[in-house]
Structure formats: C-alpha cells, structure tokens
View 1 (cartoon, rainbow, N blue to C red):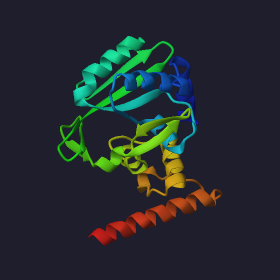
View 2 (view 1 turned 135 degrees about the vertical axis):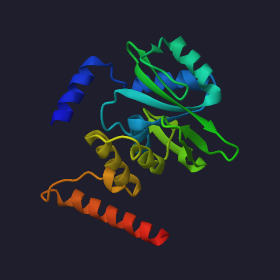
View 3 (view 1 turned 180 degrees about the vertical axis):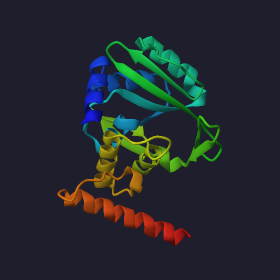
Amino acid sequence: LAEELLLSVEHSKRVLVNAASVVTVLGAIESAGIPVWIDGGWGVDALLEKQTRKHLDLDLIVAHDHVSLLRSVLSGLGFSAAGQENPENFVVEHPSLGSVDVHAIEFDARGYGVFSLPDGRRWPLPPSAFAGRGTIASRVVMCLSAEAQVHCHGQGYEPSATDLQDMEHLQQRFGVVLPLGLCRQKDSSDKGTTASCVTTSLVALEATAGCS
C-alpha cells in the first residue's frame, strides 16, 4: 500500500507516457534511421501486445554510435535534459510526451550488446536478447526478449511490486523461468500464484543442479 501511495504521488508530478507518445517518439527515431530497442515497462507491454499499466517513462536501448543523432532527434521533438547524465545513460523530458530514459550500449563483432555498469563491470547480452518483437498501438517495435527482460530486472536493484507484476505477466505469456527474487510471493489464499512460484523455483533449482 505504501508503495502504491508513493507511485500515486509520483504520477501526479510527472507526465505519463501513453501509447500515442511512444508512437510519436519511435516514429521520429525511425525516420532518422536509428535502431532502438524498448526496455522496461513499455518493453514488457510491447511483448504482451497490450498496455497493462501506466508508465512513467519510455526506456530505450541504443548503440553508442547513434547516441549523438538520437539526442538530436529527441531535442527536435522538444525534449530537454533532466538530471545528471553519463555516457551510458541519460534522461530527457517533454512537457506532453513525458520522459525517455536512454541506455547506450556497445555492440561487439559477435553481435553481443555490452552494457557498461556503474561499478566498472561489463555485461554482454547475446544477439537473441535483441530479437524481441512486440506491438504498441498496432505498431510493430523492436524490444528486449522476454528472457532478457527477466535478467535485466534481476540485476542491481530491489524489484518493486510493479516489477514483480510485469515479470509474472511475462511468465504467464511466454513461460519464462523467474528467479526466486522476481517471483511475487502471496499468502496461501492465492494458491494459483503461489503454486506457480514454487514450480518456477523448482525448475530453477533443477537447472542449477544440472549445470553443476
């Protein structure tokens, strides 16, 4: 309940990013010839091919080589910088289109997309991670795969109730295995969801045992 109240307050202070805004932003980016992949909440909803919740921002992944051009395109739409920036990540905001959170990565000769993490480590994702395709307002978009979404949500921060709900939707739709930390725990009165979490955990344990 406390988290829901905090989100409600945050919603009231920020412009939500709706499907029409996403289409507008992606249309301008596509016209400039810049490949981008949708991550985060809109990336999940793209995979699900329907909007399941409200979104505070649009998360985009782009190759380092296209960052300058992407900044120019977003600026041309009326976006301006919001907060601190670094070479790997920046956020821009628009008074009516909302917030866009850009994550820059480096693609190597194998086609792996390599994220540079704040602690200096490098995290390579294979080409299959960028093979996701989804739909937003009838527009086909590129996005992270369901499996890659799960891995990204399991790294570096404590997932919120909204994150856990997103992951649950992906599991129900695509059958992806969720690590225990991304498995929403409920009381015994919700036996369906609890059973799903137990099954997922057992599959993960069996997979681990098979690799040892």
